[in-house]
Image (cartoon, rainbow, N blue to C red; front, side, top):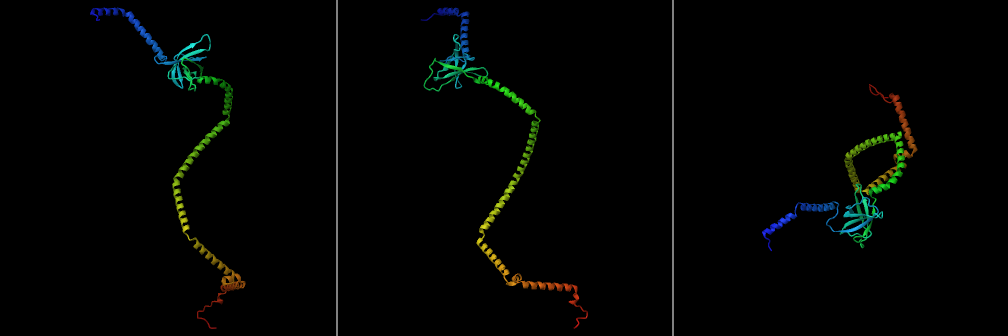
Length: 315
């Protein structure tokens, strides 16, 4: 069934009357509200279109946890807090609704902890149990608690620090007394002198080592020469006919022995001189007579030497 041109124009006029300015403003407002809602959900970190499994966590104290807080497992973000329900009739019963990735299977026995950092950001850490068989059913509730974190650990240390403060004061007082002692200042001065002496000694040792390093090549060359000479001497000794040499030494010793035997006997002049006293006495007497003759010759030379101008006279 086809519409005539007149009918089409009439329908257009009716639509224009229906979509007047007020209707257009209303439609824009509705669209704006929808966009604003989804934008706020997105900014909160809530998943708009993804499929999630919902679980519940019961806490006694949520310590600033709020909707859109992140949920982590092993340091990886696996979901967000969707809502928090506080039981006004029973104190200490707070339930947080969390949406977790469908790929995560929550082992039975797992717990949750609220953790705060230094900047005040709050998150939930899932403490996954080691139970590969049983799983927490979707929609069930797990137990939650509060992790101490850095601030909690610091708070736990405060009593210990308070007990240590008096001891620290006493130690500081003793240190002040010790540092005020002139002996400490003298010791520090001595330490400075020792350090200076060590520096000087180190410089001298460096100079000595440098000199030794320069001399080492020459010393090594000399040592090599000595070793070469030693090798040559060893070679010569190895080539020496030891048996023949010892035979010659034995012959020489035998000759010395024979000569000694002759000296000890009465044979030969030296033997007679050494063994015959009369020969010694005669020789001694002859030497004395010669000595007397020489003395008389020096004292009376004319008795023994005659000079004549006219020749020798016949007696």
